[in-house]
Image (tube, rainbow, N blue to C red):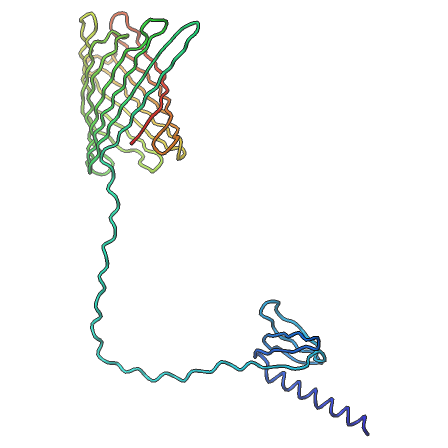
Length: 323
């Protein structure tokens, strides 16, 4: 009789726990275990003497009901009463807060200066002291850009003069819309080794920006050109030429850049007479405004003065400063 009563009470207790489990399903519960630990989570299911809940960190777990000494169900958060309908009073004008003006971007520098200086020294079987310097000033405003470029080279090899030359060029570009621009090129200088006491030139033309990207630019130009060479023997060469030219700049990396310019001058009255000039520069930046520079220059004249070579090639290395 007593054993039947015990089985009835155990069955009644299990039913009560099962009912309690279904009643709190989905709610947050805290289970006190027989070993003194506590486990909290969302109630999933209680059946066959096992309680299943979802822990916030380790996910779904199962606990034997015989190991649970007590359980606490967290009260659901109170539901706030519905807000009363808002009245609709006449809106008053909201004052507009005064916003400070956005800071203006700094204006681009109108003047840019570039200075280079280099030397080639050697002492031994053949002593040589060769010096070169270059200065460039560029002024830009709106559609106008003006560049003044001067190059000087002087030196001796075994006491004999091997370089004595000055070239000054000034070029003005005016953007006229789209990719087109007008230009005018002028220059003056001398070359003692080529027996040119004075050289001057000028000529206008039209240019076109073939490629105008951030890291690569390519331009083409065509125009007319007037050149005068006064030689040491008092002879003078005066000629009209066409001018066909191209120039490019390629920023290979943030530190390494290459630029070049090629000019071809075919004669107007005598197509068999022509001249060309080439310049290439390889630059490597040491700091933001200091760089190493290697320059290659080539000047060719197929009708030079008496005793003067047709071709003149120069290689120069220098240290540059840009500001």
